[in-house]
Structure formats: C-alpha cells, structure tokens
Amino acid sequence: MNTIVLYTTRSSSSSSSRSYAKAAKASFFFMKQVHHNSYKMRTTTLTRAARMRITTTVKRMRHVVAFSGMNASFCDKKYRRHHRPTRRRSIGAVADQNHEGVNNARKKGAVLFLSFVPLSPETSAAGVRTRDLMEGFLKAGFSDVHYACASKMDEQENREVNKQLVERGVKFYANAIPNREDAFKTVLEECGKRNPIDVVVFDRFLAEEAYSFRVREMCADALRVLDMQDCHALRRERARIVGLESSGGSGDTSNVIERSINAKPEATDDDFAREISSIFRSDLTLVCSSAELELLHAACGVPKEKLCLAPFFETIDTKSIITPFADRKDVFVSIGTFNHAPNVDGLRYLKKEIWPLIRGKLPNAEFHAFGATCLPKHVDELNDAKNGFFVKGFCKDIGETLSTAKVLLAPLRFGAGIKGKIIEAFKYGTPVITTPIGGEGIGVPGIFENGCDNMDAIKANWGGTFDCVTPAAFATAAVDSFTNESLWTKQSKRGVELRNELFNKEKTIPPILEAISNKCENLRTIRNEDFIGASFWHQSNRSTDFFSRWIELKETLGKKVA
Image (cartoon, rainbow, N blue to C red; front, side):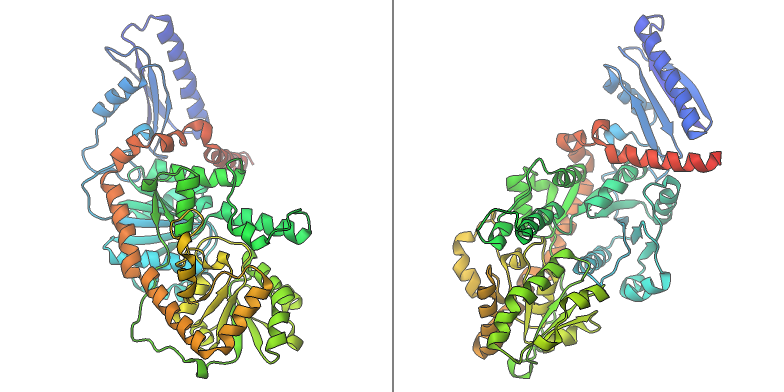
C-alpha cells in the first residue's frame, strides 16, 4: 500500500489550506491513474506550518514526488522525524530526495558499473581501463563488484573476454535498460542482495544521463561517480576543426593540428553543456587526462573537489625484457579500433600525406595497421600493398606485434583523453611518433597546465616524438627513430620509464579509492553543500529524466491497451 501524506495548517478552514488541499487531492488521483496502484490518503495537522506539503511515497519505485509550499522545509523536518530509519536503508526503502540519506559509518559494500555496452578489454583501451579499475575496487576490499549494460550480452563470450574478472566473482548483467524501471530495479536488487550498493560508476556521461535519476531514487545512499573516459565535447570540437579543414571550409591557413590541440568547446555548445551538467550532477568525476582535468577546472569552473585524476592502471613488471633494436622487424605499426573516428582519420592522413615521404627515404619499409572492427570498406580504402601500406585488422597478440615492430605511428589530428596505444607501445619499449594530440596527458602538459615553459626538456626525455604538427616533421621523426639505433634505444628506455612513472596502478588507483572513501564518509555534508550540483537536479533541468519516464509510460501503457 502506498501512502500520500498531506500536511496542512492547524486552521483547515483557511482559504489557502483549502486550495492546497484541492491540489493534493488532484495529485492523489493523478498518481493513482498513472501507476495503477492502490493508495491511501492520510492528513496530518501541523501546529506551526504556514503551508502544506504533500509527499507521495511510492515504495515500489522508491521515490518521493513533492509539491512544496512556503514552509516546506519545516514539513520536511516533521516528515523525517516521524519516518526516521532505524537501520541502513535498502534499495526498496523510502528516501527523501531533497535530502538524500547517507549512512556515514558503514563498511565497504558493493560497486556497480553502468554502461550502454558490454565490457570489452580486447577491443579498446577504455575497456582495459575499466577492467583495471574494477580490479582496483576488488583489491581495495569492496565486497562485490558488478557490471550492468543496456545491450544484450553473449554470456559465453563474456566469460572468455572477462575471464579474470569472472573468476574473481564479478557479476555481469545485460538488458539493464534505463527506460524500463522494473528491469533496472531487478538488476539493482540482484546487485544489492549480499551487500548494499555503496558506489555506482557511470561509464561516460551518456550512461549518467540515462541511469542517474533512477540510481538517485533507488540507491540514494550510493556515491554517484562519473567516469568520463575522455572529454567527448573536446574530441568533437577538435573533430569539427579537422572536418572543416578537410572540406576546405575553414578559411584558416594556420596548421590544423595546432588549432586542434589549442581548441576548447564553447559554453554555448549543447554537447558540452550536457557533459558539464553530468559532472555537476555527480558526486565525483574521474578524469583520464591531467590536461582535461585542468581544462574543466580552469576554463569551465568545475571545482577541483568534484574531480579526480584517473589515468591508466598499469601492472609493472620490472623483470620484463625489451627486444633490442637489432632484433626488431623493419616495420612501422599502428594500433587502434576502426570504429573510432580519430583512428581512421589518422590512417587516412598517414597514407595520403606522410607515408609517401617515409617511403621516399625508406623504400623497403612496411606499415601494418592493426585494430578491431576492421570492415571491408576500411581495407578497400586504406590498404596499398604496392607501397607497403597494409591493413591487418584485429591483432591477435598485441605483445608479439609491438615487441617486434620497430616504431609505432600515431598520426592523430583530433581526439581526447590518454591514448592506450601509446601506453601499450611503451610497455614493450617501442618508440612512438605522434602529434601533440597523441602525447597529451602522457608526460606532456596541456594548454591549461603548468610546465609548458619547460617543453624542450620534456621533448628530449619522451619515449619518441610527440610534437609533429606537419607531415614533413612527422616523416622525419619516424625515419630518424627507425634508422638511428642510439636514438631508438634512448627513446625505448624512456618510454618504459614514463609508463612506470605515470601509470603504475600501485600509484594511480590509491588516490581514486581515497577520494571515493572520503566522499562516502561525508556524503550527506557534501551534498548539502553542493548548491550547484543540487540545482542541476531541479525538475526544470531534468529533461532526460522526464523524457525517459515518458518513453516508458508511452510504450508500456500502449502494450496494456493492446
């Protein structure tokens, strides 16, 4: 049985009380019609309330729909005094959304990752990073770790792809559709069976938009963490610049890569507004690149306390042996999925403008492009066996490929975040030739970071070359590293050192866990003081919430009528 609690003034004969009571009754009948549930109405007279507050508690949905008068805060206090929980609330318990409940003294519970797609570490660096972060939670002592996605999932394939996570007890769930409350609630209940959900991690801002309002209702005690992976709006702004250049419509004769690296989205950009809104709605945001963290803080005004640097989480093997220069094949390689636009654009740029310059100096050299989701159209467009430019497709053994290749080429003209292909190359001591886009966040400061005045020293001690902004500069750097054993050896060693210094998971994961722990322990206070974040939860700013509810109501009511 669901209950509508109606608070009125002591003098129920006043005209204002009567008008509010009428609104309450109207709301009562509306809720009854929409949810097809049984309701009862109870009226409580408050001694000092100047206005009424109606609170509809729908236990099945675990949310509170509130219509507030002038003294609503006083009524809230009365409501919570009579409904104070005696123990930590479960998923199905009641929570007042205006003051999201938090139990500050509790042991580590469960962690839930939410995404639109299945976890696939074999096909993307983002998948590898998420897998490593999940392992970090397990190692830190969280009782359970779960991964749920909106799409279908082949269970057998998932067990093979994520074998190490499955063996450690991570549970995977498919069809957690955000527009289906019952389906999503079932997943949450399953995840919270053994231990309450303490942390929910949204994989990119799109997942936060789709799921966060339901998480806020059903798991009010849980810390909501946004994992950006990269700044999508920044990547799109850079792609726009490159697209204008390619179409000949930019009207700007300056270097396109330089313009791309110095670009930032404008406040009027709709996509960027969505991403920033997602950051402010979340309790904590994990930012992959230090350059993007400073962009969000310095240029966008996001408080530092809402941001946490979360780069890559590499396992360091100090006993690994790097294949020396003399034992490497005379082959350039690239790694990157073909369903990621920056990778395909980079290959086109390489084939058309850079590779002819390299082949002019190294007529017998070959280039091999590896990556998942390589389609026939990619092979038809890019493969050029006559000139030693080969599209190989999926890489079955990335270790073998990178440890035997001489140099990795990453001619990226746009993109964001940290490039996993470069970290992988450093792991095997393979020098990297790339652009400032590729080197960003890997020991290379962004335009809003300190250290730009020390760029010469950074260039001299990098694991390759990262400042190639023209085809000629890129080709020269590639040929130098390919032919100069002394230079190659220095770059190879430095790449290994950079990976160990910047991305050792023993150094990069603890600050994240500490930030999450601090937030969990003080979540009530943090949320009460986060005025900007709270404003983004006001109903006028929750279009994705109400649109999702409209979709569900439209589709489910349509089926009932039929």
